[in-house]
Length: 345
Image (tube, rainbow, N blue to C red; front, side, top):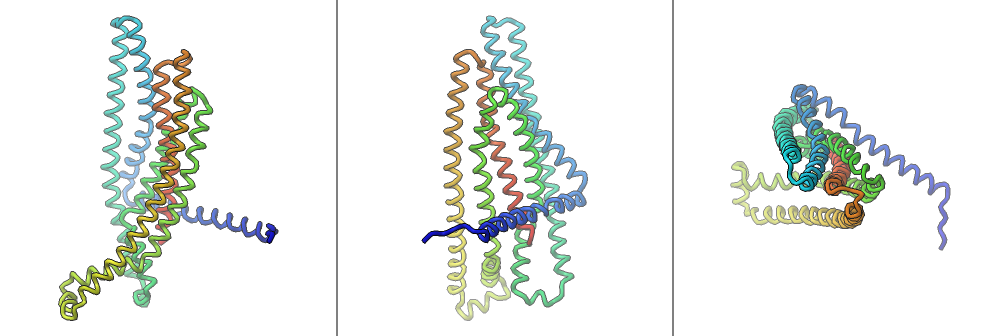
């Protein structure tokens, strides 16, 4: 039987694409609201966190460039027979590299400290909003199981999803700055290398997007059973109910229900994890093959004298950083999307 794609099929395809775009826009639409809430929670910590995160993003490219200069300076010092001037140049570059390392560590740990303080305050704010909303609702809501499913989804994610959106957005900005800076170094060797890295990294974004949707659907669907697990644990350990459990010999039955529910969760988690990591491994192999091929090109150019040993070192570090930052950008986009999906609760 032959099947023809008619106007209706094309319309469905366009409508499907429009729906997906609308879904994406709706999901990411929560991000500005979250940033507004963070700013109202603590403007000072918000400014400090953004400044530390963005400043840290400039360190990798500077470190790569200083390393290239250091390798070339060492080669020049060897060629000059270790003169005082050539050795002084090497020492100053080592000092500069040390300063960059110390600065990077200071920015990293300072950012983590500020993030922890901001996260505590913001999580408390979100939990207070949930409690205040629950306090204002009519009692009829508390007789509806679907309301408890929604409440469970909201409370489960409240402690880390909102602040996660902020952290992931800053990480996205930081990764973009790092990517632009190291791509500039890499493009100085050969512009087509950047295209190869980009093409081999794009599938990573599609994969992360697909698995983010699957994880959100799985966690949302589990809300009734998640509440059941909590309830079973409460019934078997609370001083208000444990006597009845022992009296009617319900312990074995409740334990079996707990085991069965957890086993189901484990099977679902295992299937999703194995699927995600299998795809990630395949993409990593493709990326490694591309990296090795380009490294051969740069090594041959160095042997031919068109590049210096410092350039070879720069390529290796810049290529690794470019791959890493492209994946970091795509990964941050996927994480922001996933977190925004959960925030719809």
